[in-house]
Amino acid sequence: MTPELLPVTYTPWLVALSFVISAVGAYTALSAAGAARRDDRRVNRTNVFMSGLALGGIGIWSMHFIGMVAWQVDLGVGYRLLETMVSLVAAVIVSSLALGYVASGPVTLRRLLVAGPMAGIGVAVMHYLGMYSMRFDGFFDWDASVVGVSILIAMAAATAALWLAFKAKRRSHRVAAALVMATAVCTMHYTGMTAASVMCTAANRAAMLPGLLRPADMPVIVAIIAFGVAGIIGTDLLVQRTQARSAVSNDARLRSSESVAAR
Image (cartoon, rainbow, N blue to C red; front, side):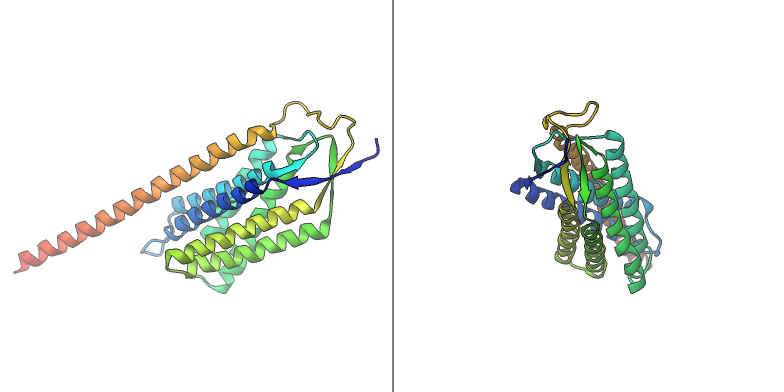
């Protein structure tokens, strides 16, 4: 059968939801990364991993698959579980490396020029691994120039987001950084999607290849991972903040007692 180019549409409210999820993941990640710096200038590796888990697992991976649910084409499409999970692991590892590198020392231009592109590449790697997990009766016809543009957008915007996040002291600035990071992720995703033309080679478009995750399964999987990760990280950061406040309070009481005893 001669390959047929199929039109693609998007569900607007799911596109908007994908941006919100990415922003929430980015904010959670930047909050954890900011808390990774200790007073003794050492880095809390647990917080670095949590920041990578939030950015990679929620801000990038969850956003990607909500975006794919928003992607509508008249064709039976499924996802291979292995590549889908590999894309999640890759996003978390690269995000952890990028955020950990920035958090490990003073925010210099050199650090930003390493970590920003690294984070952007992490977004791109996850996206194209996620695309590779797709199976249908046909193939993607890629526009290499648009793929390149999508990666450059992700690298540039991620660098700007990291600069905002680690230079800013106010929560409002961190929110702005999360929005910039979400813009980087979503712009890369939807630009990357325009690079892929769907070519159908099946007579029966509705036919689904066996042994695949269906698009209808993805929201449940994404919700479990996104809310699970957010809950774990949010709880841990709250516990850390409570312990820090308790330590400060105890230190103040000890100093007060020593002052009274000295009199």
